[in-house]
Amino acid sequence: MAFQKAAGHGNLPNGNFSSVIYSKKVQMAFRKNTVTGAITNSDYFGEIASQGDTVRIIKEPEISVSQYERGTQIAAQDLDDEDFSLVIDKANYFAFKMDDIEENMSHINFMSLATDRAAHRLSDQYDQEVLGYLSGYKQSALHASASAVNDIVNGDKAVDTAGSDELLSSMKLNKGSFGNITTSSAGDHSIPLAARLPGATALPTGTASPAMVVARMKRLLDQQQVDTAGRWLCVDPVFMELLADEDSRFMNADFGEAGGLRNGLTLKNFHGFRVYTSSNLPAVGTGAGTSGAGNQNANFGVLVAGHDSAVATAEQINKTETYRDPDSFADIVRGLHLYGRKILRPEALVTAKYNAA
Image (tube, rainbow, N blue to C red; front, side, top):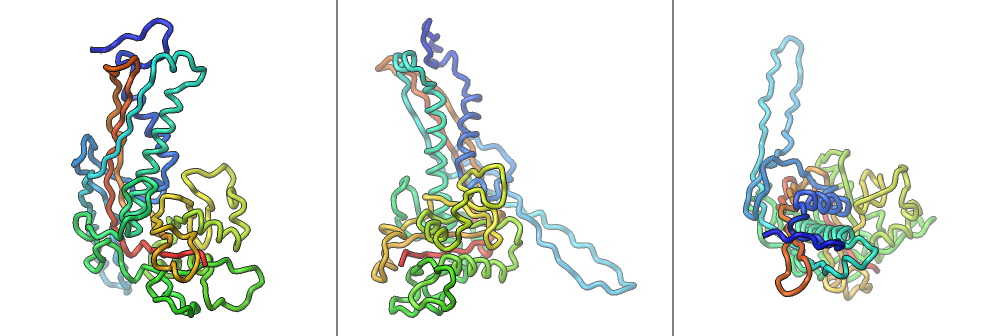
């Protein structure tokens, strides 16, 4: 039964609520906030109606190049329009109550405020889970520390040599990746990081600099012949602070292009990367801000760089609805966000774990 709006009241009972319009409003606000949507392949076909649905993702084809000799016949390659099934196996929801009296008496548009906040919290949770997945860590509880290294393969591995986290061991940076660091901690510990001051000529012996880490990430992608167009780098606020100390360009958020920035985009081009800042990257223990050699294996942050084609995602704010609260004079509004994600090209992802020295 649809409840009618009481005269003079601005509440949104069932009879005056458009779930389609509201879903679009939340979806638009969601996509303005999420970093994941800016760095992944979201080209899919199929309908997302409920958890467990499957959509199809198209992978870019591999093209062979052959030597040409004059007078010889050219053999045309049959393109393999490879696609794969992406299962929509993740779901998050929001639900809030709008009191009739508060809505009527307030000069503020509560629905607009609630819409923006719901989208922000959904995008936060979405970014945390997906950024954790493509970095090799489990992250489920919002803003909690990363619980463990991911050891559950999502479907089939894209590459047989990938680990249980679906990543390649050769694309993971740690302390042992930098020969100039001669401290006694184990090579698989996190990278001790410190800004390299302007004018410094000799490499430090106890730390790496933020620019050194980014340059190494670039080199690994270059060696994998990953396209230069479409590369991105996602860093946390601690790394960004160190990078700003080392490179003054990061002090100006709009460096390189007018028109403003969004979705966490901090710099349009640094070593060929679009640079995004997010607090939703994995933080193990107390995170990257915990300094000292003794903390390099227990407390650290994780960075990830890659290419737009490396990870596929499909998501939809699928259901929004409202109903009267049977125990009060209020409307309850709720919505369901469904999504799935899959690593397609592990050779186009590189991670680095670090802590502030």
